[in-house]
Image (tube, rainbow, N blue to C red; front, side):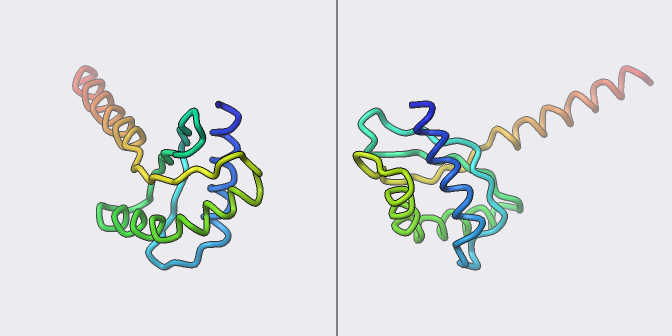
Length: 112
């Protein structure tokens, strides 16, 4: 499953960046893919550069382009089933940045 997830992530990353021209889709990084064992569903985790509006617009644009991206996955990977894509914003990068800020603030207070 790890290889399938990584292959789907690579295909999506490449084609989102190169092939989609929807103006709603901003700068997107596909951080991970979790495919169900029966290969019928795939949860795609992504981070988006920008605020809440950019995130929502990008998720809408990707939802609209899901069919094209699923066809691309089918064409390139030739899987038994082409997974239905579910787009999920990955908050781990934001959380990590917040933790770094808190640690930096705390360490700065101790040095004073």
